[in-house]
Image (cartoon, rainbow, N blue to C red; front, top):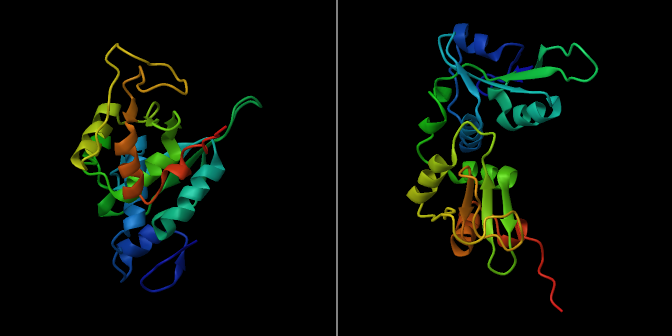
Length: 215
């Protein structure tokens, strides 16, 4: 059951409480907005079959949806089984829906027009890998996302963060010496821009890179 932040009461269907009750839907916090925009970039659906739109996310990992629901707080309903597995070699499909809210009215991943620091932090934590040693680079792997690498490059450019692309020259392998990546949906941020990006999102190089072994 979700607790209404305004009146403090708990409801099985908080959206219905906002639709027919006296409480107004609260504004999203910065953290909630960041998580919503990360989910939109990832490929969450926006359903508009109610007065207000709602977010819908599917996964075979219930624990992952439960952690998202915990992070979203009152905005998220509890995960529910969407499709039951029909054989022992497959998994149940779970669904997480948000409380209907006007602030989740996104038409698609490219509707995320600016990159918030908290959203960028989620992307780095979930999808980024440090490649190299002293002068390595940050590789953000968006394969499997609805948004493509070019859109993230544009979002980063608006924040003054440069990226590099593989042009057929130099390294392009997944090795410790790689400076570029052959896949267009793997966004590569060069060393000094990566350090600035990490600082912007409240992280440091030690959060993503292994300690350098000397001697």
